[in-house]
Length: 449
Image 1 (cartoon, rainbow, N blue to C red):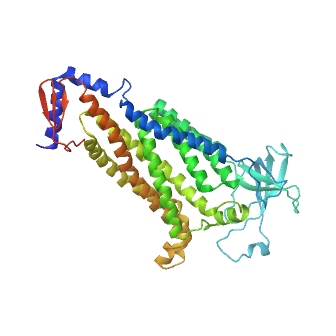
Image 2 (tube, rainbow, N blue to C red):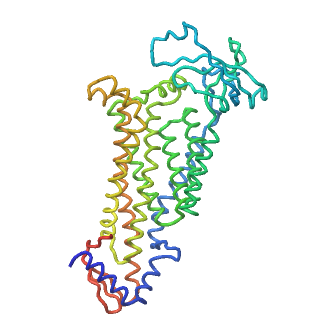
Image 3 (cartoon, rainbow, N blue to C red):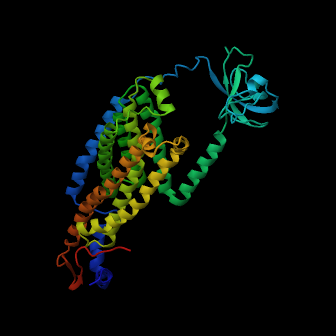
């Protein structure tokens, strides 16, 4: 008998005896659509989740930074960032000495800019400063809102220097559009997702970053921060359900595996975590930061977002399959959900690789412009770090599918099997008998569309 015939037969049997089917269905699913499980399964899940939550809370308190983040040593103590609006720009020809630069592609600009200050010690006044120049310098025009650095002890006659544009308004508009789109589509769940996003940023900015700068072990800080984000955000977004608990357990297991693989891979590749200008400057400026640990922390935090996505998807898939057909056993649930997981992984892997490639595109261009051999390019420390990030994250992502699917199938499959056999006179085997009608099903043949 074909897969479709098996499924249709089982469906027809359930339709032919609506009372018996509804009796079974009402025990399998709560009024809000959540799958009910046995008290034993609940106790087993709580035995893992409660200690994990308590341990995470204790570690947060223990690792919480005690002092404020120190300022950059090279930053003048009296330096101050102030806001202003450009009133007028007055370009002038550059002197011969200034225009005689060794690199023809570098454009040298000379002249003055009239700026009205919005805050700072001279708020409301109009000041004159030089036009910003050099690689990456902002190009200003009348009406632009800019950021200036105020250096009262500057040796020049211009204590104010334009360093950047103000872009707060533009970013707030984008953030509002982002939130509106999420709420319009996700409604209350979308609102909870935004609250979860706020929690993630709060943990990163208030705990992870200050704790690392305070000298705490970066890898341990990342593990605790990731656990705090996961436990809070998943339950906040998806509710306190068995499906969410299964996703949390799957994410924890996959994140542990990812951390172990990251430690092994970075050690085998002899990566120090100091490769680019940012990490080199950070290593010189804050010598109490463990750079290799910082690399591992970045890999874990970067992998967390994709891992919980896959874990939630797989747990929800198993729950929906169990809800659609409570007679499915754990093995059948696993096989059906694993097919969905393989399709999901095939697309997500490409997403991860392209995301890392996009972030490293300037580096790829720089390495390609040097006409170096391919093996030398791939083993460059900068690119090697990205390769390790991609490979380790992908392996952890792949592992999340069977781990979460197996956990969900064991919990939800056992619940469905226990409930469908609870009604007297109703048995569930390879052939399902309901009120005298048999729905023939060959194990392992359920294939969802």
